[in-house]
Image 1: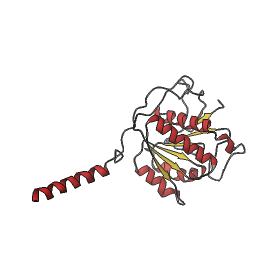
Image 2: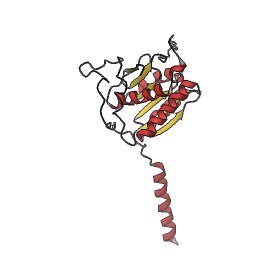
Image 3: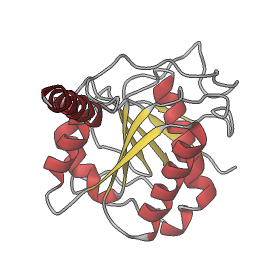
Image 4: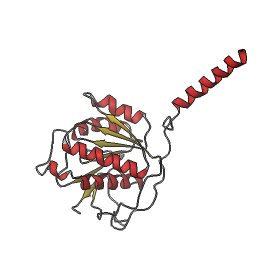
Length: 218
């Protein structure tokens, strides 16, 4: 009887440990990307300056993928059309890349939810939704080792760990600046949003961070 009880205790202890171990417990070095950037993504003889803008050739990012199991937290706030389109694109990209995606839907007070996302130790935090721009500006500068990718918007004064993807029709910058005069919700097409997450992720994966990736019509 004692052996049975002891065995059950050990089994419960092991099962408890297994339940709490899911591969996200600790930070880890940035996984190496799979593949390489195509010609025209960036001029190797003139790398972008901090907060600079690059305009990659459409499709030049298609050859770069994250390693299988790449840890991504999707931060999202809002149910408007552009935000929904971005969320759909991020989820599609993660599924195709076999990334480990988790979603944090931000509530009325965004800062604690953004901090919670960082505390999950992801390889990348992806932000979708204009309502997150100002809260991200508060948090990102205090977590410089955490890469962030903002799709369909940008921070007014990003630090080196924040990369953004924008295009004509997007460009929300927060800090009272609001949307540009060319903002167009209809520009957040499925094709555009898919290109945004793929191009932005390719930039982060290859170390081109702290910049704006500007998408031209394709």
